[in-house]
Length: 258
Ligand SMILES: Nc1ncnc2c1ncn2[C@@H]1O[C@H](COP(=O)(O)OP(=O)(O)OP(=O)(O)O)[C@@H](O)[C@H]1O
Ligand SMILES: [Mg+2]
Image 1 (tube, rainbow, N blue to C red):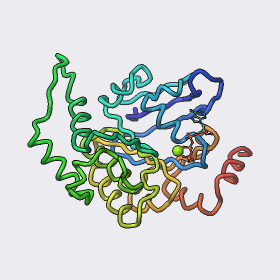
Image 2: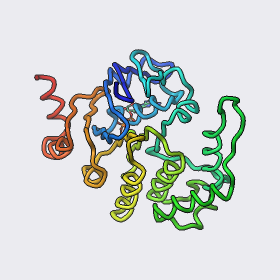
Image 3: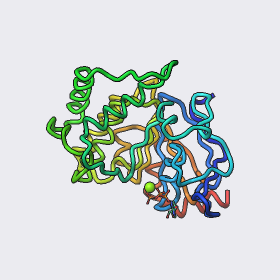
Image 4: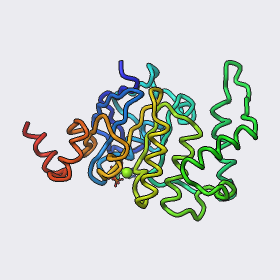
């Protein structure tokens, strides 16, 4: 069985009848990179939030299993400890909390809750060493570690820090929502290099993107096209190139008749 199985997933905006996800089916395994592409407003970020357990959305039908465990029964922090990571399309600022402290809290939250639920905080020298290595890989200036998280960061800096968090948390399923948007050409190469360096048989990556360009660096095993809350087409990497010529409207129409 694939590590991630999404079956007939429907989700509404909480406490409304507004359905955003209208029956998503998707399967992927660790060691694989999948991409989701689709028009603005089609439900890509909603899918990422629903997978992470955002309280703003309620699942009305369907199931999500990861490594044989039902994610839908778990709170967001439990999903994070179960190995999920979401890089936000719009990362939030946390004034007053430094990058280093924020990441250390997140790492310690993951390390908590062994069999006895006891704290097991990372030793600070070990943490600093890992953080500095990850910052070096992502070509982030060391002085940035003591700045407030995302407070006054440029758009591209925020995206780079999302990947820094990912590098430190070592997820088994990373969902990257438009991590490439707003990155300059050099930053795109560095961030892509970071994703490739972290990828391996124990990690799956789901990349949400509008652009073929990141897929030249981070090569997807499969691409899914999401239109109006449904995946209308899945295929290999060549699908992104086909999309550039056909566009979404035509692809969705073709599916409707076939
Ligand atoms: N809390 C909410 N309240 C009202 N509408 C919402 C809410 N959350 C999502 N929506 C709507 O659901 C639809 C899907 O939004 P979503 O952010 O998932 O789109 P997207 O595919 O990520 O688009 P983009 O490519 O622009 O990032 C949009 O029409 C959006 O306005
Ligand atoms: Mg989005």
